[in-house]
Amino acid sequence: MAYTTPDNLLYARTHEWVTTDGEELTIGVSDYAQQALGDVVFVELPDVGQKLSKGQMFGVVESVKAASDVYAPVNGEVVAVNEALLDAPETLNSSMYEEGWLVKIRPSNFAEDRATLLDAAAYEKHVADEASKH
Image: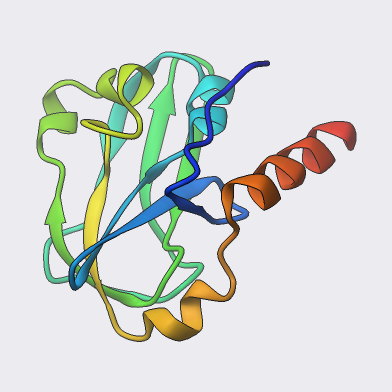
């Protein structure tokens, strides 16, 4: 399966991507994850103001094949959710790194959390290792 892994993003082992935008982080699901899910038909997102702990489930992405939980790759507070996905969840398939973002978070300790995230090369190795186990 061919998928894109932009070099300018960081990745969680649970297939979320993270990018920094000033004081906020934007989070979405990777191309690998959306391809594995298939056609996305529903997205459930947290409320603005919700505090998230790293590793905590904060949303659900449902496809015609399966439902998958989405996990917070960092500790922080939700400052924005992508409301457009509620009406057009398929955007996650067509534009997962641009218009298909899920939430924006104000991190509580990004310097510490960043150490647990993977760069693009490490994430691709993680995906390959995971795929070889199935």
